Each structure stands twice: as structure tokens, then as C-alpha cells.
Amino acid sequence: MGAVKWKWWILFGVLLTASLEGALQESEPIELGSRRELFVDRRLIDSLDNVRLVLHAPVDEGPVLQFNQPAWEEKHCTYATVIHSERGYQLYYRAGLGSDSDLGFQATAYAESNDGIHWTKPALGLFEVAGNRDNNVILTNERKDFAVHNFSPFLDTRPGVPEAERYKALGGIKGGLYAYVSADGIHWNPLRDQPVFTEGVFDSQNVSFWSAAEQCYLCYFRTWTGGDFAGYRTISRARSEDFIHWTAEGEMDFGDAPREHLYINQTAPYFRAPHLYLSTAARLVIGREVLTEQQAIALSLDPKYREETRREASDVVLLSSRGGRKMDRTFLSSLVRPGIGYENWISRSNFPALNLVPTGPAEMSLYVVQNYAQADVHLRRYTFRLDGLASAQSDAAGGQLLTRPLTFSGSQLRLNYSTSAAGSVRVELCDLKGQPLPGFSAEECPEIVGNELERVVMWKGRGRLAELSGKPVRIRFLLKDADLFSFQFEQ
Image 1 (tube, rainbow, N blue to C red):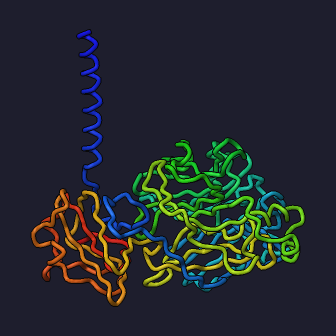
Image 2 (image 1 turned 45 degrees about the vertical axis):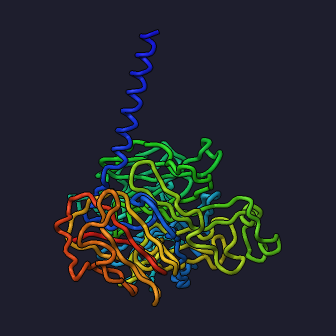
């Protein structure tokens, strides 16, 4: 009996030790360094008091490009990617006369812009289509690997990448994903003749990028929860050291978020905070019948798919990840809703292009393919303020947000924020117990009022934080009728 008791005490001790170690690990400071942090998840938040995380609606800037070339575009253009580089803005999209279910002639087409607003389709002369080369086609399905069906490129930022491989892409649905490389994003060559990755379904846009945070290539690709074409469309992840040999890591973990069809995931590092992977995903709602049969006929939808098309709807939702298989759905509401007019309420319309890109000193743009399967299918531009997808927000009564313990490097704290004329922001730096540090209390921080992207926080006329750099602190943000979009410590 005594031996049994001792075994129970030993087991209790082991469990208690594990619990204490887990609690200690959870309380260990998060190392921010000088990273910019957005309020797209609750990773840094310890508590909220009359402050909530809010998803912001974009400004609809209207159509920017019509897909209206009858020989190689027509109704089924989709799966777009926008890249911002020293060349300007580069757009890639699936063209061709075949739909998702009818793989007829398909191609990858290209457009470019100096400002992200005004787009042109250059006559590249690379491929003959309908008897001439006066077109913007950069790849066709002559190779029969069908990479053009969902071709999705990125600009490779890995240090030391060869000039001839500065652009990379994955595409393919039959047999797996094929890898392509390019020096300029226009002239592409297969990296090898065989698929580089086969452990997925791939019947949508599958995206990849170099992760500076994880020091590897990542691919976010289509899978199904119940196996091939069963259950819900979802997202899985794979990684590679060389873009050729890939290891599947499994389906993404969405925690307790409800299951929904995520048709394309559009995951990429956020350009102002590349450790954050933001996903502007297309959500497909099956059985959402908005159009009548007569309305569907009036839109000239393909009779073969008309009933399916009119009984589904899609919009854009926001997901985020900080690496690994964890993906947050902090916001279950739509980021971009379908627009006015029943032409927006059909299946596979409102599909977002890959990547948020800066298009002005204070704005960034998200592009969305609308009116899919219709004669006026086009690319539309939506804008947000920089970092402005979401915010920590309070009402006029005021509230506060307290962070978890963290460390930073730098000597200044900068805020991206907005207040009303009567609102304000104050910042307090605290010890691990949440008590204000001498010289950095809210009372010593003058009210911050206005609407700025890079406001330096001051305490009694000083904003130098070098003495606290590398030391564990908490931040208390006191908000009154205000939005806090992001913050960053820097030199």
C-alpha cells in the first residue's frame, strides 16, 4: 500500500512539475526585437478592458483591368497574383477559354503598372494565340502539366538566390505541382520536368514564398478535410530548403473556428511585418442561393454550371499565422463583401489576388477578381490604410489593452493610430506585474491625438527607451474613441 502511495506522489510530482514548467514557459517574455506588430490576432494580448479587436472594411476603388480579349481571356479569368518590386507592379492571372471544370485552352497572362492603379497588357510576342503573337501571354498549356491553370509566382527574397531564379512559381493540378523560375517574371522556364510536390489535391491556387522568419520555402496548398474532394476545402502546408524537395507538414490548425470552405488561401508575408503571414482567403458558401434561375440566365452563365454557380456565393476573409501549422481566425466576419448587384453573388466571384501591396504613402491595395464566368469579368481594387486591416479599438468611454510580457530592441516606440477630435491614446510601460515603471506611466505620457502612421511616443518630453531595451516589460495602451493599428520599437 505504501509503495502505491509513493507511486501516486511521484506521478503527482511529475504532473505538477510539468504544469509549472508550462506556466513558466507561457509567462516567458515574447521577443519582439524591432518587429512591427499588428492587431490581427491575440498573440501579444494579455487582457482587454472595454477594448475590442475590430476588422476594417476597405474602400472600393472600382475596376482597374478588364479581362476582355476574346481570343485568350473571356469569362474564366481568375487565380491572380500581384507582385510589387523595383519593376513596378506585375500581375499574373489565368486566362484561356476553359473553366475550372473544362480544361480547354488555358494560359497565364501578364499585366503591369507603374502605380498599381493604371494597368496595361504588354504585347510580349512570346506565344502565338489565335494566329498571332500580339498578346500578353507568358505561358500556355502546351506542356500539358497544366501549371497555367493555377500558376502563382513570387519574388524570391532569399539571400544569394541566383539572378536567373529571382522569380519562382508553382502550378499544376494533374499529377502535382510543377516549379518554374524566371529572371524577370516574364520569361519562365521549368525548374524540372517532373512535379516537385504531389501530396495534395491542388485544384485551386496554391501559393509559395521564401520565409525569412523560418528560413525555408513554404507552400500553402489545397486539401480536403475528409480526403480527396470530401468534407471541406481547407489549407495544408509544406516546407522546402531548395524549392525542389518538399515535406508535407499537414493540415493547418484553426483551433475552435467553425469549418468553412476556404477555396483559395492567398497566404503571404505581410510586406511591413514579414514574420506575420496574412491570408486574404476566398470563402465559398455552398447552398447560398441568392440568384433566381431567371437572373442567372440574364447573366449568360454557362448552362452546364448555371445551377451550381447560382447556388453558391463567395467573399474574402482574413486569416493569419506566425509560422508552423497554427492559423488564426480571429475574425469570422468578411473582410471584403460582395458588391451591389446580383452579378457579384455567384460562385467563385470575389476571388482575391495574392498579396497586399503598397500603392501610396498611406495606403495599400488588395485586388479582387469579380463577375467571374460573365462577359465583364474584371480585376477590382480595394484599399486600406497601411496596417489597417484590423485594430484595437475603444469607444468614447475609454478602455485599455495590456500586453503579455515582452522584450524589445530599440530606443523609440512608434504608433500607427487614429483618434476622434475628443479621443486620445496614452501608453504606459509596466513591470511584469503590470505596475507602471518610473518615468513611463500614463500620467507622464501626454495625450496622443490625431491620425498618424508613425507617431513617436513621449513621456515627459523624452522618448528614448534604450535603458529598457532587452528587459522584460508589459505595455498598457489606454485608448479613448481611438484605433490602434500597429506599433513598433526601433532605433
